[in-house]
Amino acid sequence: MKRKDFLKTGVIGLSMAPLLDACTKLATPEAAAKRVAAFSAGGAPLLFATDIVAGPTTGGENNKGAYVSLFGINLGQQADLGATTRVYFGSADTWHEVDNYRALVPARGNPYLAAQELIVQVGSLGGATDGTTLYIKVTANGIDSNTDLTFMVNPGNFYFADNVAGNDATGVKNDIAHPYRYVQKASGSSFTGIWAGGNLKGGDFIIMRANAGTPWSDQAGYSTRFLRFRSHTGTAPTGVAGTGYITVQRYPGPALAHAPEDVYVKLPTTTSRGGFMGAESGYAGTAGKYFVLSGIRVEGAPVSASTDASPINLQSSANYWRIINCDSSFPSTDSGAAHQKNGAIAGNGIGMTILFCYLHDVYGDGNMENHGLYLDGTGGTPDYLGTAKDCLIAYNHIKNVTHGSLMQFYRSTTSKTFTGMEVHSNVMDGGGKYGMNFAEGTESVNFYNNIVMNVQKYGLRLNTFGTPPESSAIYVVHNIFYNCMINGEGYKSVIANEWNAMVNVQIKHNILAIKDGRVLTATRWFYGTATGITIDRNLYYDYWKKVTTKYSGDATGIYSDPLFTTPGSDFTLGAGSPAIDAANASMPIIVSRDIVAALRPGGTANDIGPVEV
Image: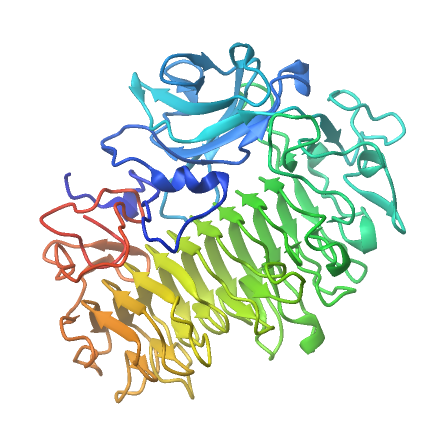
């Protein structure tokens, strides 16, 4: 394909490289999206994910069923929607066009991607019966997209919520003209409104409104959270009533208005104990599973009434949550260790999917333990409870985390480990601590096509096990670590292993670029024991030119200027870059697309770093 200034123009957009390694066997509906076909990106529409994977074809607004957001690139312009850009659900033999089109707007998340969100209301889909699994296709200017995303027809009801015009006493399910007032209103462990006993079940939807732009700031849900699971839970969808995800979505606006409502949850100062919360420990594993949060903007309280008051806190065993296209910030001014160990998103669960989110402005104190995205491993019996595993974290933008790491995996109990984790195509910018912290219990993870930049300490930290298991498989490939160690006094390098010997850690085809960092010349690129770590064919450069050699343990590495178009903002490789066609090390995983969905290789071989030109 032609070499282009992809990152500057955003023409090509997202990456969804398939990972075929045995450690990545996700048991989520997103598995199909991970297997995007090797598909020519020359202007063709390309789909990566949906917010929901199951829903009804009846009920809701005008009795026309679920709203579905599709995320992709090359989906056309707003004027094309419903004309030359159309959406179909079906199979190779029979396709049914959706009933109506709501919006085609920019998606949140990685700012280099130019991803689009296309919102439809499905309608009858040809009378498909409950339990039917359909494929999804977008046709733009006569060209079909990939068709590997699926949607199951699954029964459910819709509850509209309006914090200005709603009334719990007169709210009627499936009636947009009679909305409820509160998403969750609690008196002790009793609920009224949408969350009242006998109302909400698996497969149901809460559609939040942004009436007159009024923030949602006066709701007191269970235990003074905005919404907390206690006895409710979703399930895997099966086509049977009462099964399926419980979903909270923003209202997508009228047909073809291209105006999804900005639903803004602003948690109240001092009284808030958190936003969207998983189940408390006593209900972990039985409640709070299979939940979708789509398109919501939530801001944590600057001063909170609880130690776990994150705007989105999975808590324990939030299995199969999907957090899609959300905006979460946490400008906390709380001090003291009890109010730390939080994040814009925090907690744990199996099979979680976190896509296209903007996680930003997370503050804290000198404990440096409020993170951008913080997945933990805590108590729970049996052993599979209270951990994060088989999770997909992709296309997110994590920015300005002043008192913590941009992303962290950490367990607090010896029995919990992080396995089957897939982290790709994220932009992580501006951290007060580490960029990516693979801390205690990180066992198997694929970390690729990410940009980590402008962090105070290590760009990548390994601190995983006293005695790593033989099943360990940590693969760090095709990333950029730029301008790390900005103020790293007492710290020594861009990448560090701060604990014992490792097992099967591979660091390959990355670009490590020192800009303002205070690294020691004796260690500069890597610090700590390298036993069990393979470091191969990375590119190294110091813009200060105080360090003029590559890492000594990287026999095939390159020391040279990567020739970024604009270092720090546009990471496109300029003509003559030594990274172009230079990735020649054997790879533990297949990365068939880059951070903006360009197919690899673009030339005779893959390029080093996340950008293929």
